[in-house]
Image (cartoon, rainbow, N blue to C red; front, side, top):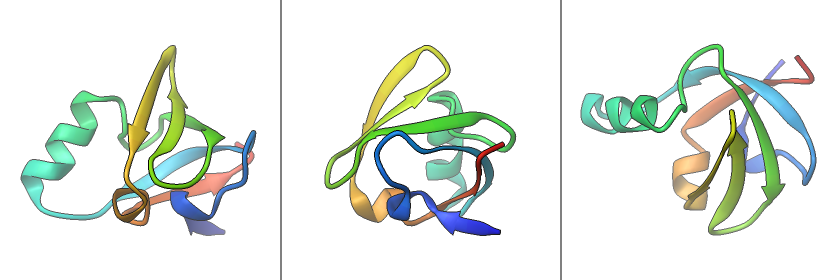
Length: 74
């Protein structure tokens, strides 16, 4: 089941399945590691949301997290 990243709880991990939005924004997210197939963990939910993507920590606004769909637990 896919769910928006914004709904993940602290400590949950998932695999990014889809990034929605304008091509420029999708490209920027890909540069930061937010792209299909990458694992993501929520460290601190909210706005901003603190994420662990690979070895990097990343903060995104809640509206940005809503456009990233993940599959939990993979």
